[in-house]
Amino acid sequence: MKRLLLEKPFIVLLIYLVAGLALGLVDPNAGRWIQQFGVKPGLATALSVNVIMPLLAVLFGVALRQVGLAILGAVAMTWGFMFGLMLRYTPDNGWNVGELLRSVPPLLIVACLGYAVLGAVTAKASQIFRKSE
Image (cartoon, rainbow, N blue to C red):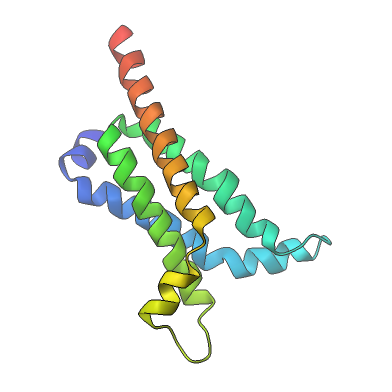
């Protein structure tokens, strides 16, 4: 299975993209669910950005052991997440290119860089560990 994924990197990037998209699409419902416990709904987004997505970056890095895919995957996962949020939080007058670019929080761009570093370091460490066995 792993060899098939590495021979077809677009499938791996699609998996990253779908993971981010799923988190973005589920965000409003997760926010409502978490609000029932007296917590601000923004915690659901924070959990996705600060816990789940970094964890996915590390898990994919360990599983695939490909630094390049880990970096591209981090970008795909972040874009998927943003697209999922855009679909769920569409303004009444719709989106235009300017609004889309302004709606991307700088913190999410920094987080994407963090996912790339986490995934790449984990992938490289997995390669080294695998060679030493």
